[in-house]
Image (tube, rainbow, N blue to C red):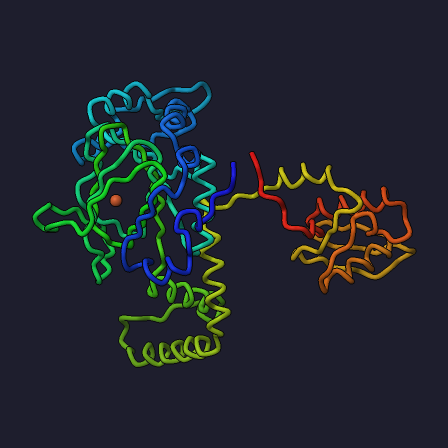
Length: 402
Ligand SMILES: [Fe+2]
């Protein structure tokens, strides 16, 4: 499966950020072909998932006539030998609700569906913010949810069937809560459209919308992005600046010496002000972005694959240093001690020398890492340093296939 990218959804990213992001919806027709759209989520795959005991009831939600259905209607308690009581989804009850017109949603799809994980990772990178993925499966001819807005930015990908959307003007003011509206409150929609498989729709934060399935069972995936506002970001900055013991302790408030408490507060404010003034905005922005990208639910390590590919390393393959810190010790009897990632190892001086050269950039063929030695021996050394994460292939890794 080809990796998902943010560009695949929005096309020209610069155009997206200057014209649509936070301002107005974006509708892109036929962006994905039908097979690619179904790779993301398909009815077939949801049949598989509903039958999997490992998909806990918390991941499923059922709504009928716009109202949530209690999970008791489609779960049962099982007493597995040697474990506590657990709730499990009963597929037949979910199907029965669906047949009677209920919409079934899978939340946090990226926790258990690899395609959703790939897309979540791409959007987490693009926005430096936590992302959620939800699949909405609606029976033919039924409404999904009543008109409402969500306190997040939403990307919709229609993957099967069609869905009729009504979309109202994106409000200028940002409301932090979720709100359900009546048709009278909203008036005429700004946009009324039908999404077909492969269409992508972007709804900015707070844009009121409603969706209903067409003549067929309809499946779409929503990827929601919870951007941090200034309030959240500044709070994170202050949290970081006040994390050390200079801000430990607590004043006695409410006592009979309010002047002392006020004087202490003056000192703390001065300390915080000095630290804020000393911040480099570009460095702090980068730190906040890195923190946003490291949220749980989007990581996709590829360590098994990386290790498996090492077997195919050839003497000609060029290797470079990774960003992993390595402490290179002094030479002792022809060998130099390296400390890396909690491991200590002794390598021939020639390897330590090459590693020092690589610290400033450049690459070497794996077969020449150990100068003047047989290529096979050099290759073995290159493999073990690559396994440890000290070296990596200099050429960009080819796109992963699964
Ligand atoms: Fe919504």
